[in-house]
Image 1 (cartoon, rainbow, N blue to C red):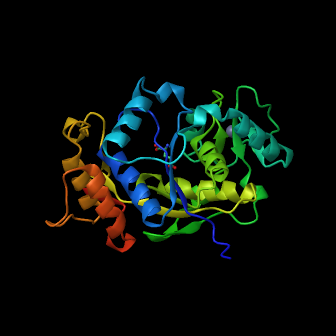
Image 2: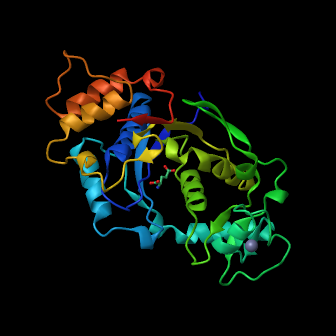
Length: 295
Ligand code: GLU
Ligand code: ZN
């Protein structure tokens, strides 16, 4: 019997607006990687930041995925329903003295040179009104690099490696890095496929896997679409809003972006047909090993 864990992937959009071309690429890449390996592909709505949430965005994202034939397995998971699990983990980390409260405002950190250097680590501040940070000094060796299945070896700079990062914000909201790791562990995700705009969060996330005694998944960071160097697609960019009524041309464009150009003999009359071809022909070797691509 093989003891290899079955492949489980996910797409985890934040409901801060409708799906744009960049998020479609992440959805498509994670779907094809999972389905080409006969894996499970789940959708999770990362809705733990109400101030940034746009009314109706969740529904719109789910409808768009369906219009593009990107059908997920099982129920949609909502981070907003998972607070109990986050609190349980925070309590566990606190018991192990792996966290501490920090009163530094953005302004104070700026005055300290723009980098948080452990200012409150030994102050024993109370939690209320303060943010909560991970105490990296308790970790044997900080995470300075990881292997990405597409981009190869990824190294973090010394500041990124040593920063006692925030896991709960002073406004009481759970930090993205905390919630994402707890949920990916809970969903037994074996590989995370997402946009390279998140590549620098990966060190912090691997740190949390270590502190929680869990095995980190594999990572694939896909190139992100930019309009000019460093300029991500924005909601303001109307030319790139994706069409739910006529999805085929945009789906073909997203496949092309991922290095899978559909040839003339392929049936492109529906998203389902195109995806069937794409699942059969998907190969990570064809995906550009770039962090961003200008479109
Ligand atoms: N919810 C995050 C975002 O939309 C992505 C989470 C992830 O893929 O790790 O930026
Ligand atoms: Zn502080």
